[in-house]
Image (cartoon, rainbow, N blue to C red; front, side, top):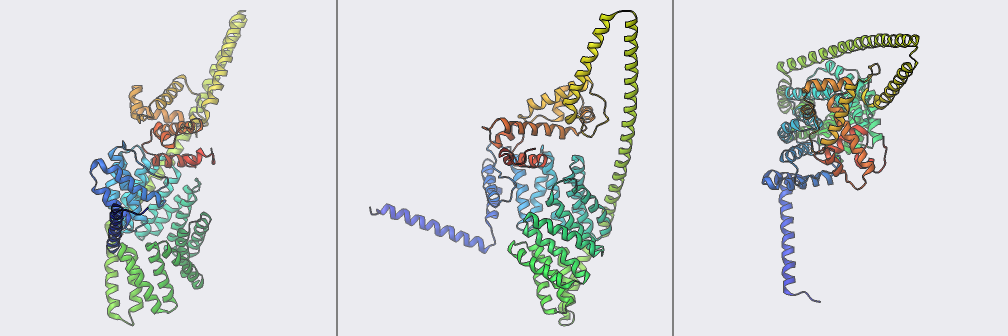
Length: 574
């Protein structure tokens, strides 16, 4: 069958559309606009009713790029604040990590932070604070970065999560290092290393070991720097993270250069630079080029050193990285001062301007204040731990004494009754004691694991304590799907003050109330996935009070060590 004229018309229209799309793509490429930029612009310009669809288009791009931990798909009834929070946060993460644009990332993350603070997920607030700290750190704004890092540490400390605490301590160490206080940074990084040993997060451990290498390099302890960088490199290799392994090679090269191992340093950089070019990691590439320039200067290969410094300088200027720009400027001064004194002076003048602006007296005072506060908090924690142990011993002694008095009283009562010949009453009393003992053993077995974590010396549960926990469990089960299973609503239900209820739950369970309620919700999620195969992960998340699948997946993985989808497939069930 031959096409009619209408078919030709449709074909012509289709070709015209293709040419228009090609032309638009060409214009976008010429302007440096990416698919991500266009999707982000479309989202920001969308009308309120169209925002969710525009956000899902952006998340579709991020999901396809495997940038998010789990595929993100927002529902039509997702609250507007949740849509704005998730979109701004993930867009900021992509701008910072993939496009190396800390300025734009900081704008979006600053916009997302208030919404993150008011959400029911404290972890996303911590993630946003971490991102903001990193953005301002990259821009050389130490004071702002330190403020965000301190807020992050406070939030992570309240959570009691060792993995998150190790991350925020690592961030604080990085800021001290950037502010040229490596000896203070060492204290934070040692605490971070200790905390990281309590978790199975090898990725985090590699990052912290890499930071330790940077700190000891700044302190002049090059052998220790090389040891930490080598450990981090081995971990990255075992995890198959080639780009991160290239960064560890850069850290190894720094130590090798300082130790005079020029051949080893050049070999490390020769492996790192091509990988970083492949990954388009311009920030780390520029740092490696600076290092190669330093190495070539040691070898008196000035011309090649200048090439490396110039390329590094352009990259650092494009990224707004003032700290490493100063490194390239100083290198160019050293390389050019004999052959081109005029250009060399321009570089050293700019270097001095950068050096003065990057570290001022006000920033030093701010960091010193945070350092003193951190030290005082550690001392307070140690003193509180000692007081807690003393209280525990005293309570145990009182409990044993009271138990002995009760037992003696019961035995004396039995003896007197037997002397009076009231055998029936004695038998009834013995049966009652046996029943109480059996009930006590059952109660102890039932609640020992979930209620007395880290409280091995606690007294037995009272009837009042048992009733309270029963009501907490029932309330959480009944209200989690509506999203009202929190301490404030529970306190209203029980006609108690929130502070009093928090103390009671912590005293009984040995855990913070928010963590305890979260575990109840996650246990319910795990039960649903075991018994209701007809439910999707999104359905399970909603039934357990999670706003979106991404939030649920991240929390589930943090607690159980596997994602919900992996758990459904039966992988590594706990």
